[in-house]
Image (cartoon, one colour):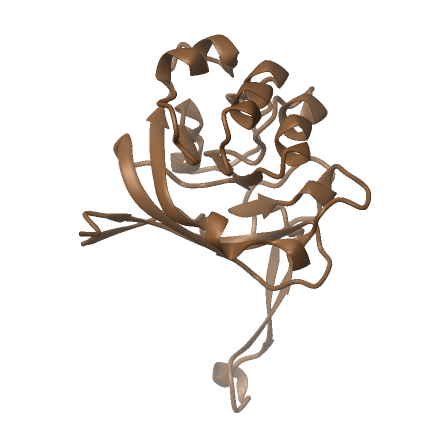
Amino acid sequence: MRIHDITQTILNGMPVWPGDPEVRLEWLSRISEGAEVNLTQIHMCVHSGTHIDMPSHFIDKGKNLDDLDLSVLIGSARVISVPPEVKVIDETFLKKVLPGGTERILFKTSNSAFLKESSQRFHRDFVALDESGAKFLAEAGCKLVGIDYMSIAIFDEPVGGHLPLLEAGVVVLEGIALEGVEPGDYHLIALPMKLSGREGSPVRAVLLENLN
């Protein structure tokens, strides 16, 4: 069995959504400086790096992490390759590539190249779903949709790409690292932190290959 870690490494200086706080990992104590233990403190938005969105991210009184069915985050998943010439994942594209009955979809796009940059920065022109694509996936019965950048939705249209999914109870998995992962079928495990009443959480996400 091969394990693909599709989680971004949390580190100082990593790109964050414009307006979100910078990620900071700080030492509270260090053995090298005379302390008994090494101890780290973390400051970050829960939507930094690899994370999930719950309905309450866009819907007041929507379901939050307390309501999450973990089985949605564990199970068969299909990685779908989006050609470089496709800049928007819309209904027309999805009708061509989405197999029927697929509950967990992970989109591997040209966004994956951003994670290889030596000087990481935020890109506004990332590939994402438009409203028609989000509606199509929600109506197709998907339980989870993931993508290889910070948002499932187009930068200037955050509601259109999110709301149809979240209204249908679809869990959104964002910021996955799919460089080196071939399109195909895998077993996904993407478990969040157990944050009471919150609208999202960082996750450690892996894909298992050849589970049987």
